Amino acid sequence: VQLQASGGGTVQAGGSLRLSCAASGRALSAYAMGWFRQAPGKEREFVGAISRNSGSTYYGNSVKGRFTISRDNAENTVYLLMNSLKPEDTAVYYCAADGPQWNMLAVTTRTDEYDHWGQGTQVTVSS
Image 1 (tube, helix red, strand yellow):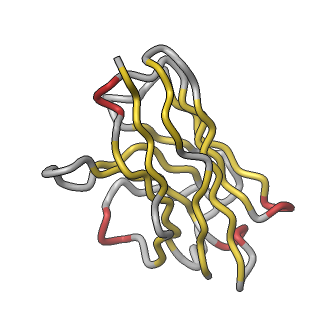
Image 2 (cartoon, rainbow, N blue to C red):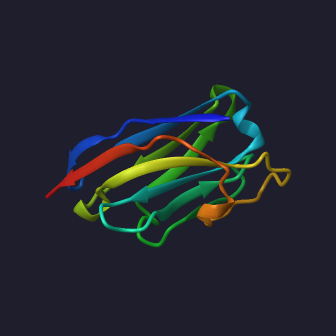
């Protein structure tokens, strides 16, 4: 599966952005999906994950309550809605696919369990 992330940009603190991750080559419904981010000089950080059937979601502590991950399997797209953005949310955001995954409810936070990665989209939050 190939992944294409989009929707990044520059926003003021307190604002919102919605990232999209479009899949091609194989049905997205076969994969659990995740979002990660990486700021300059820092390690890649888990942001959120969603299971194949959207029955399970999980978020990193730094974004919990502000970010929402969702998916539309019919459109082969996963979304990350980011509200109440902070300057520390500035990073390159990556979507990733885990699978094909047999477990409809499985999610993982581990970078090494994701087999396919998109190219990343830059999010910059100004203070």
